[in-house]
Amino acid sequence: MLPVLKSLSKIKVLLLENIAPSAIDTLKSYGINKITQHKGSYSNKELKIIIKDYHVLGIRSRTHLSGEVLNAANKFSTIGCFCIGTNQVDLVAARELGVPVFNAPYSNTRSVAELAICHIISLFRQISVKHLAILAGVWDKSANGCYEIRGKTLGIVGYGHIGKQLGAIAESLGMNVFYYDTLRQLSLGNAKALKSLKELLKISDVVSLHVPDNDSTKNMITRQELAIMKKGSYLINLSRGSVVSIDDLSLALESKHIAGAALDVFPAEPDSKEISFDCLLNNTPNVILTPHIAGSTEEAQVDIGQDVANKLANFLMSGSTIDAVNFARLNVPPIKNCMRFIHIHKNMPGMLTKINDVFSSLKVNILGQYLQTHDDIGYGVIDADVKSNSSRLAIKEALRSIKHTVRSYSIY
Image (cartoon, rainbow, N blue to C red):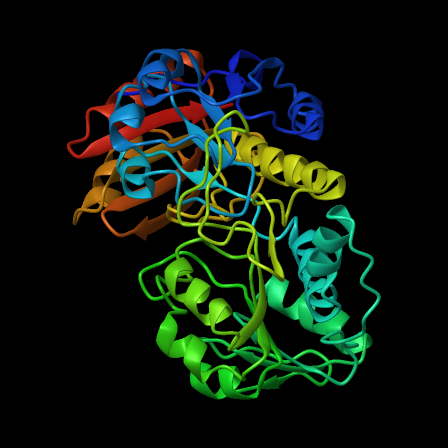
């Protein structure tokens, strides 16, 4: 059983991977001052030791939190992923331990969309080819193979927040925008939805991928899909490295069926800049490779820092989990003139009755009650009219003694 977080001033936070200072400023604005920073990441072995001293952990993409690491914690309350993705965390293990995970799915959408536009223009204008030539001392002013993007067709795979922004910018530059998404989406501007990926690949001059990392998107683009694409078209992947088969793309580029590509993500990525990076597409003409920087702008990092820190603080202050990615989602009001009790439990029949029995047996009036479940975990938030510290302690003890309790604590 994890101990109670008695007040925000006592909460200890560990921020890894050079998280933006805006996160620290935001946490401090809530009175959370015990913050430790570390520029790099830790190994699992190191984390198992270090994590025991902290209530909150903030990471980016290089730190991997396995179930083994999470089980080693004895004060852990919540995790903040200061990035879009959360696949570096064992979300199921975190949920089973009663630990919600928060991220920033929208804070860097503009940055990603702008880099996609940058790559589109660069590919159509053969910028990487001209750049390598001039570095080699060749002054090539030829316009052969160089085109404007105006009037060209952009196919967007994944029409979420990034896809929508990319489409709006591309349309303002004179491109025709089509998209394919497995979910029904509202089109912005003149963008048109297509019913299948195959249909989109056939008509696009350039295809830009903006999909999540899951079983359905793994190897979404292989030799079969590349063969469907128009001869002389371009491919951009700023989503996840598992989405495109690098081997198949290399062959399509070699045969010149695909005229060029831009990749920001790869199946295997180094953990730090000290580790050399090798890719089959290194030195391939008209290919732009960038080191997973699509969302890495100063503006995006400031926004991400503020966004995730606000979500963490809101959870610690009120118990609100509305933005959690792995947990029962409850949007609860601020605490007002009461004591708030959190009860996380296995999703078993009769748990709400047992929780209510605790308060009725101790003759404590419940002022508000919220309950939500997610898979095998139930999340209860109870506001009660508690007049004394002895009553608070008695309620906590009784809640913890309920069979199938995962965690229970109070906020006041």
